[in-house]
Image 1 (cartoon, chains in turn blue, cyan):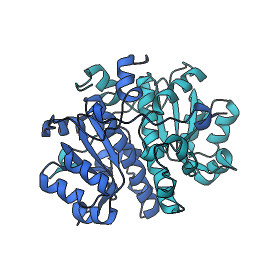
Image 2 (tube, one colour; image 1 turned 90 degrees about the vertical axis):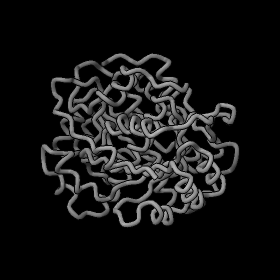
Image 3 (spheres, one colour; image 1 turned 120 degrees about the vertical axis):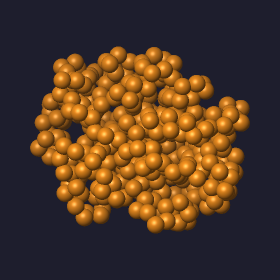
Length: 196
Length: 196
């Protein structure tokens, strides 16, 4: 497994991939949501904690509920997309450790250190959210991750009575290239990397 | 770009990819570190903020400095790997916004809201760290991301006098399959996804 993949793959995943503001009419069915999970679930997390929780807004009712809690520009995107998703983090991931990290009891590594637990759930659900974005690209889908929404109200509407809470939201579909803006510039190697 | 990529790609990126505790002797040169950046830099971040900062520990001196600040098991991994990296976040990403997000002045969206800025830097550097892990896999490399280190001392040793600080660390190289453990189980679709 030690050689680089071909240009087509590097282009699809990173070099020519874009965030799409709007999508074609092509629908996204439940089998596709399950296929996505079959990919992103394998990405690595600390002590295999897997804190990402996804609430899929597929029905008009669910999309309307989410849209009503978004900034105006984002509300329209949520309503218009084939599917929208609330990407959340499970803050009680420690509960699952005996099953998902069976070779040792890692629960004591977290104990009741709330700062460590909250920070871990945030970091690792963000890693998994990136795996989610990449998994979509591998399957030919596109996303539009967004942070402009009322966090507290989204938690009430989608995670009430649970120990999960929102990280960010995204739309999902097959991107419409006609609606793309020019791509934002990236920082140079020398600005973001230091060799020691 | 709307069809799924082939099994070989899905296997390499997710389904058969692993985190490696140790690596073969094959070295990792600077050209490879630059090729990695040419991939991960394209992954999306909020307002294109790109907060990830990478300090590459290539020399024995740099690896020793980092290893001395790690938990014992991790110290050995850092010393033995072809390359180790400190993955940090730039908390003054707002400075770059006029250049990287040119179509509007997004600096006011953050203002001097420190909580929002810190949270954004953490979330988006974590997304970029996941792009980094995936980019490595696309180039045939493997990683071992780790959180067991003294955060404050790593900041002093690698980010003193800057507005950056550590998120987590990783090793990088060509994985040695002989040293793999059995893979940890993943949570089921029904445990982590809800369709509404």
